Each structure stands twice: as C-alpha cells, then as structure tokens.
Length: 196
Image (tube, rainbow, N blue to C red; front, side, top):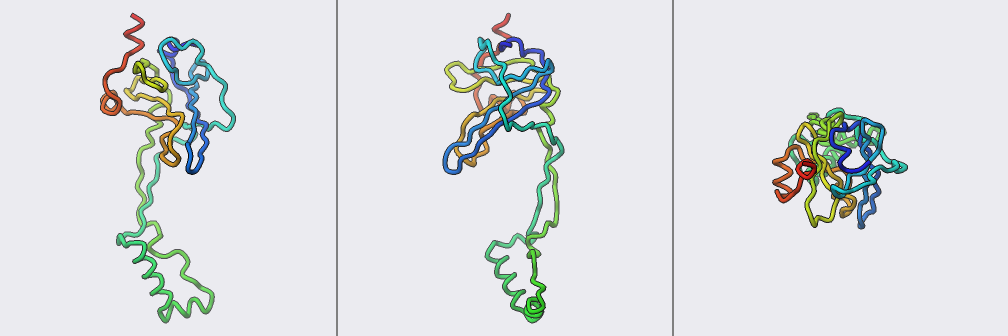
C-alpha cells in the first residue's frame, strides 16, 4: 500500500508498542489496522510507497477498553500531606488509637485516602474506531510522520520518541482541524489537493 491508498479506508484498530526508559527517552511505534486487514504505519509523506508493516511484538490495542476513564477524589477537606500525616499521628496517639494498636487493630488506610467521589471523563479513543480516513496532511521540511484526518474531524499522528515520563510518545490526536491548526499551524499540505 502507498499513502494515497489509505484515503477512504476505515480504521479497525490502533496498536501501540512502547518502551520507557527512566531518565532517558520513551519510545513508541503506532500501527493502524485498516478495514482491508492491512497494518500500516503512519506515512511520512505523500509519496511513501511501502507503508505496510508487521505488528511489533508486545504491541497493545488502544481499542481493547473504550469505557470512560474514572477519576477518583480523595481528601475532601483538601488537607496538605503534612496535615494528613499529623492527623493520622494524632488519631493513633489518642486513647482509643493506643487501645486499637495494642489489640492489633491499626488504623489501616487513613480516612483522607479513602475515595469520596468518582467522576468519569470521556475516553476520546472511542472516536477513532471505525472512522474513515478522509485526508493525509504533511508539513514540508517537518521532521516527523504526517497526520491522518478522519471523517469525524479528528486528526491522528504519532510521536516516536519523547523525554521520559512526558506521555507524549505514541499516538497523539487533535479533536478538530481548529485544535490541530492552533497547535501545529496552517502551513500544511493535503494529499487530496495534490491528487487533483
């Protein structure tokens, strides 16, 4: 497959292989499974002729769990770490705290660490599954892979390396052309315009 042949194809799955190196660089590789059963890497330019690839060992599907993401709220009083430690120490040194400790009933998890509220945020990856590829964008003289534009307006790309712990290595996406342009600029070229 070449870059032009991905236009009109639908994304069935996205896989990411990653390796983290504390204090060094995180590495990642994105593989896209298309509706024709072919696995591709995100192309570098309009003329890329061989974009098919083997799925790297230990790659994981990003679509294996598309449920919303829980966020857990603890410490409802908003105490500092030191205030939490001081309160625990005070409870343990109280009369009842010493009795509990003497009979082997320690406090366990401090009450400030118990979840008091759970909120869910939308898993945006579900907006990538079964989406048709409508265009491919590149910036000339840009030292990275291009950008795949989907039917619903999302734009995906990959970052192969990033400083450790930043979470930037792997699949990156923009929810709209507007957010893409705000982040990357407007000096890109479209394969659709080049084809005509």
